[in-house]
Image 1: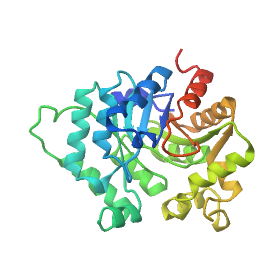
Image 2 (image 1 turned 120 degrees about the vertical axis):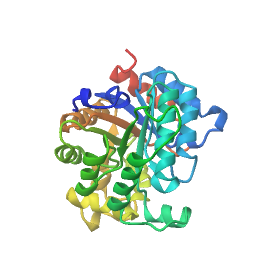
Image 3 (image 1 turned 30 degrees about the vertical axis):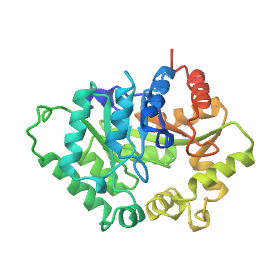
Image 4 (image 1 turned 90 degrees about the vertical axis):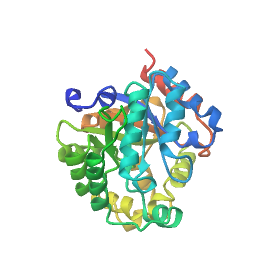
Length: 307
């Protein structure tokens, strides 16, 4: 794990902790979005990671969560760099941290060509170059706001060695998604001892093996069609036979943990042993719209998070 003394306050607070990564905040009316943060906060989870794709804008979504919670950190996993320019991103991050006592973590990512070109109408550029340029523009941004000196934390979505190197040089760490503990160990080797690694881990709590394979396959269906992830999995020893829509059984078992709370605890511990700073769990339910309060609470109680 990371030496937390070298991290910004919002990331140091997450050292050795467990959070939740979920899309379900997208399905609630704006006036009720903060319920998710409130309830996770009460359960003892230390961070709520929220995406930005087809739904809500990342910073306004984060503000809804922050304004209705008191302790939990809200992190974007990830805010799309094509959704706003670098000046807007850095000023938003500083404002949210100033307003909410350093409880916001800015997670940034280059997204994927279909989302960038078809949805947003931009030209998808070389990911590593685009991310490096964006972070450098953030550092060069000026502001006349009283928050312009406010510290903030930023991590980037990073899978391969080149993007992990960008994270090492230009960010406070990385937010790997759909990875194994082996990847976590490789990421720690590239990033060194002082950077933050917030690992996303998909889980299916309970249920039969057939149900697990069905949910894991539904979860992986989109990702198995994206080059960024296939390239990452190739580096972990998977091949084209594993990349059919939904993935092979081997791929599903490697990327999605199935079982009771003890099985989930074991995978969390494997990531920490490999060098993770924080693990955020993505529970795969029957759909993407229903907050899984009962499952989140069951695992939180088993892990002793509220104690």
